[in-house]
Image (cartoon, rainbow, N blue to C red; front, side, top):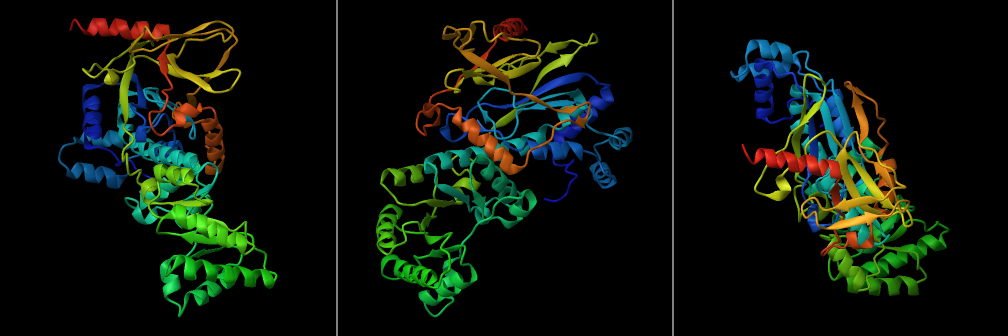
Length: 483
């Protein structure tokens, strides 16, 4: 996980194609787009994450002597190609949508402009890093939306699919809106807030529950969240917790971050009765925290039932994105530069309409309603196109072009989403820290209409093509149909 050289974190065919390009002398400059085809979890949006790790990967991209020795041992790579790999570096340009940004299917999240060997080779690692963190950030955003302002803490390390998933998943969860993580290594690596209480085993290791609570309160008086369901929540756990809080108050110990946690049972019923017991005892500001296989749907249901939970610890369903375990990002060739320096558009056909790619050198604009600040649509266009927001703009569905929307001039504004990250192989972008990205993400989510945040049948935010790009795509489709 701390290994900086992840060059061999790739599929074999990336290296066999690299040798093929080398042996045939292909040095074309090309454009690849990374995008995804459908929102995870049946949602109306996703959250972009993982760019910082992509930057680190590209900056450290080099074949070590050990890497080359291993490739030689496979018996499928020739000596001159292996010699070439000793100086292999990324020298191209890369554009990306910043982390924390709300994103939608079909639009380029990353655009790579580089010699074909370089652009092709980075495909696998770029998708690996982009797909995982974008998935977890999206899941976290959905869970935090369900919590309606309550704090959500990521508790998933023990259920994550390995150390990397746990660490980078925690990073992505914070981007999506979680206030903290239980993962200490992630806290150290990314300067994240870390949080935790204690286990049932702490209670069971003492002669009785009261003594266990008392010992914990002495150790952590400013972070005294007591787990109350080891034996009996109402007859033992909460009364003992109240006894501890009363003693702390009587002894002049400030009651700052204190309360109870429940990890089992009917959380709606338990939390409502717990709230009454705590309030009657004079502790109306005591936290009621809950865990136990929570996800956005269960949290939403508990909120509807009037649960009095104020903090949610979410583990398995968040760190694994259990209902949608893969993001589905892809990486496709969009253009090849000719001898005059012009990019010739390329298109991939498919019997599935959603798999037909958008050709050419493109960028993405986000169109906002000027009055509300909400997203009207995203707009994929050719990179050289420019727009006057005081002029009328026609939007139409690229798959069903008879569906049109006209935006009057002055009623909208536009923002180019793709920012330069690498230029001529040098990084020109300063990555924000994770908490800064979380703040960006919070603002981004506010630009979504409430209808797009629904968990069931969310409203679609359209990703439209400019007229020029649409006509280019149609001409290539007609041309390809005669091959």
